[in-house]
Amino acid sequence: MTVVQPHLWIAKDASQIGAGGIVLNIGTQVLREHLMQLFWDERTTAEAHINEKEIIASAEMIIATVRRYDLYNLVIGMLDDNIVSITYYNKQGGRHRYLWRTVCAVTRWLLRRNIILVGIYIKSKSNFISDHQSRVTAQACHNWRVKRATFRAIEALRCDEGFDVDCFAAARNNQTAFYFAYYLDPYAAGHNFFAQDLRAVAGNLWCFPPPSLLGNLLQYLRSYDRNAAVVAPAWVDQPWWPILLSGATALPLILDRDAGHFEMAHGLVDGIAPIEVQWNWIVVSFSPRAGESAAFRRRLPRPWSQANAAISAGMTALGRISPPSSTTHPPFSS
Image 1 (cartoon, rainbow, N blue to C red):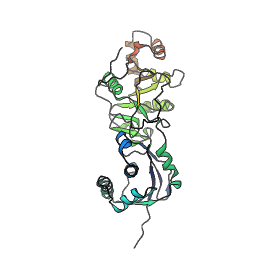
Image 2 (cartoon, helix red, strand yellow; image 1 turned 120 degrees about the vertical axis):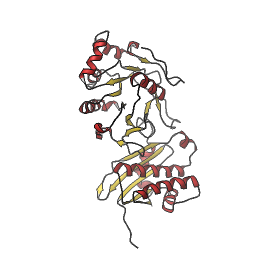
Image 3 (cartoon, one colour; image 1 turned 30 degrees about the vertical axis):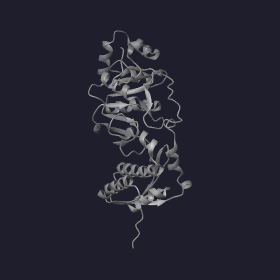
Image 4 (cartoon, rainbow, N blue to C red; image 1 turned 60 degrees about the vertical axis):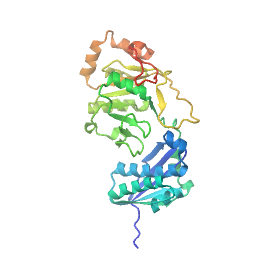
């Protein structure tokens, strides 16, 4: 019997918090950099046994990796420290039918790409990278988003046709079905927004990046001449602040820091302190085209410098968003 060595090695792990994984190598190319980090939704966190989470984590890691590299015609070796998960995937069955269906669905999807999966046991102490990724808390990776009610209200005011692309998202906090993620993600349209050719990305862009990436974001939007709604802290001392406001095509909307506009988008809430926002945030309709922003500034009833100062002071005249309510669209004032 001929023994076929795996062409791709991956490792995964699951915990009560979430799932983690890493792509170790493809052939002779050593990677060890493309990680997966997912948090369980409310149902999975509350109800699922750890073995079910391990099997789901395996499925999502496999799908995310295959889609990320567009793989065909190879053997995948999956390193796992959970015997139950390995048994289900290697034997294509188990005691619970609903888990068996999940495993068979993944296997059939792989076979359509002529891919064979082999589960291999690894000791937990040797699986430390995946284990760490599965246990990182939500706050440590800033896995929060604008609340859905606030997001819908912003759409109603600044984007009548709706946003199409969430440029900085994760598996459980995406605002749109089409989104780009940083970590490996089985549902993302792509990974790393700054690696995307925006000429091939159609639709309205929603950008809520980490503040440290705002300068890079504005430069990237300029290079592709793309408009976007940008969520940023009202931080006037930053070098990107004048660039952001100079490209505004509408009055920026203020998200009060005390109004509760942000949330954890998954079920991981037990033992986690409420989100503390240290400053006001603004939503800017940004355009790199000087003509569009100049036309807007000409319509302002006061000098743009005063408007800049008003944003910094959090004045309601620039469109303060009220706290989200139970309605679809929270009330606004302008």
